[in-house]
Image (cartoon, rainbow, N blue to C red; front, side):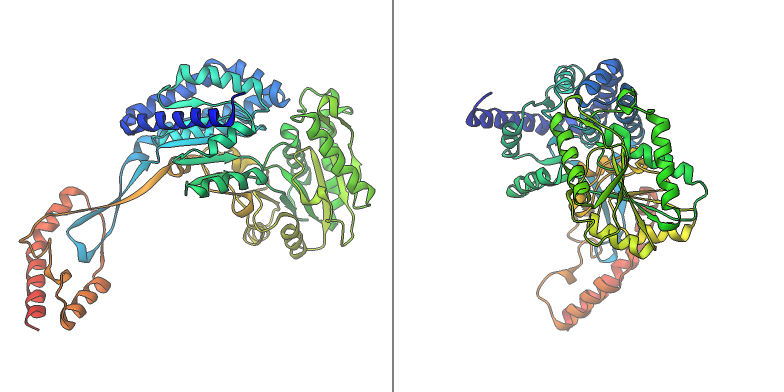
Length: 520
């Protein structure tokens, strides 16, 4: 490992090198962006099996999960970005205030420059390459920093990125906490981080030191609210069980706890257990479809918080509970939370489990569910799910339990969609990406106004705006600012026609107002 000064010097040189490449302007062209997006997709498709194997070795997720939750999402997201990019790059035409007419008002999407993307361990490929799609689409250079916990995925990305993407513009940096700390000390133009709230605060502080814009994709405890009015309780149970166990529960948008109406609580609990047994068999440790946790330490943590809550009488394990740190194994577990005031005062109910442990909390009403969701998840969990056949119930949950994203009658789907924005709010994150939002997130929206340059035209350069001001001149000028209507953006030909038709009228009005102001 290199020393801190050496790392700082190396990363500083890298930042300057990519910055110099960006200033050449090559990333601004549509052709370049399209070619890089094509290269990224080719990289994944050409080495599909290698990526699946690397992800499985690193995270312990089944190969099918690696495909469906990572590689397939990259391909589908790239398809959305590639199909929409040319239109997204067009300047947005906006209305102009009448006082500055004739003029053209527009918004241009411009790249920030050199972007730093910090990836997590639970989705070591998708959570790097999906944001990278947006960075490329917006015309940025980028440095990718994979999680140090994912050795195989990191090695694969380090080898393949220079082969498929423009090596003048994209680099992969490896290392642990010292390297990440050194990276954050550099003057990046934009930072995107996916990970824990604790590290997110460190990234936000480092970005604030340089006033660097950033996106933080964090996490939290995501509630599920289950109504007593359901078309199919069995389907709801199956979807909740699936969402809690995918990637062994190491998903930031996974359902963490279920707030279910008392009248159907026991039925839902039994249905969830039944579906877990159908999915993973009587001994889940032998199932090829159940993933493993990232490390023995992660298993010991899950083991500790579960035992602590049990010993204090705050929860009762009704299914599963088995663990094996050496095998990185935690069995799909269902716990019933005790009906006591202090039942929520334990680590299991206060911290993100990041393991396949699902808590069931019976409630008497939606009001109680909303109150408990606020106590457990805070103001803004990353996700919220509601199961109900009643539209009014669905809408009330969406209105009263804010979250970064939500799905009605299913789980996780809002994060899987390549067309919707994915991101948190408050403690669950800042900013978003996905679909067009990926392009917009990595772009600066630059407002531009085009004016005629004419010193003789009272239309193009009215004298009312210049000193000296008289009371009458001021009143006229202020009235025009406040009362003239917005002029909508027009097609160039139509705009020119209207300008020729109305310019003489406007000139007479301006001339009369100017003379009146001068004479006063």
